[in-house]
Length: 494
Image (cartoon, rainbow, N blue to C red; front, side):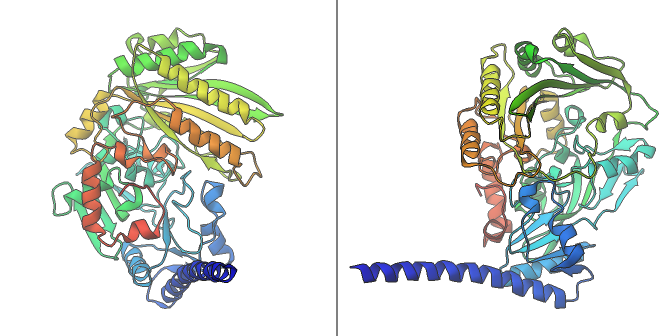
């Protein structure tokens, strides 16, 4: 019975083709309507402006996507009208603020509508309320520059070209041990829901559940067009209130560094201490060149032995420590400026602090083995460790808590990031299989949350949250037709 098989194949192909055409048609119609509408914003389908938006993502996997059109809103009303039209025509879409995502499709879209927020970049400081108000197109470097003269800062990212989307994933700053996740400093937000409705959410008004869900819920709950956050007193550039800098270790110190890491998460709970440690590999001529870098800071006159003693006892091949302002601290990993976009990939794990360092050695061994096996395909890799202390979790709870709802501190968020060499466009099947195997077998402490901003798109992050059931319930309330999940890429599990 060959004929029925052929007919079935033709039927299936027709259905798939119709689905693809209907998706494209929905996006085309939405873009046409956006262009003809009363928006006070620019809608571009080709040319230099279109290219500037469509190709601006930090990750080449996203910069290579081609949206049907790119819109550049300037106001909340613009975003609202755009979402209303996208919702009406059932179009696919993506939202880009800072564009610093390693998850393919999370901040750009193929054959859909890209809402690019770069022109929404206002920021202001209110000394009376000790708050900062900003739009989503602001980068953390811009915020730092705007606020420094007032002697305050926001709890933004640790890399200056990262954008405000960091807040929706929780966010980590060097102030985290003192104030909690970056999202914990949020006071008020304006949110455009999938229907285009605009609401203002706070911890105490009728949208308090939405407010909490946005603190860790990533891009699933709406488009935030205005943030009001705590202004953290940090001093000006001249106020050298911190001490620290960078220590670099040879790869022969791996075991000693891993032991110090495990002990740090277990024993250190000083809100004045902030650190980031990463094992970095560069690749050239089929050779791996490893390096270990510690960014260590203390809001005081020195790096206390009780906090950093184990790290300071390890011989460093390079040491650059001095008195610093918070402006100096936050700019240590500065904006790299105009660089050629690379294919970037993230993935996450989490390990509690312990006197038994076997899990730390195991995860490093898996990382080193993968790098060695694929040294001909990689441009650079890092295995980074960020401690989350009890003081950070308690500070966040004092500010009202978040959707992540970690049960305690005393653990490291672990990120495995890799980039391909300049010019490489695609991840090989072998490398991708090895990455996914790494995430599946790498040691991980159950009951502690993964960090969504540093995770792979295939990792199930929401189920690791203490607030997972709350997130599901809140999502159902604000998006009962599941429009966001059906029409934009983002975290799974809702």
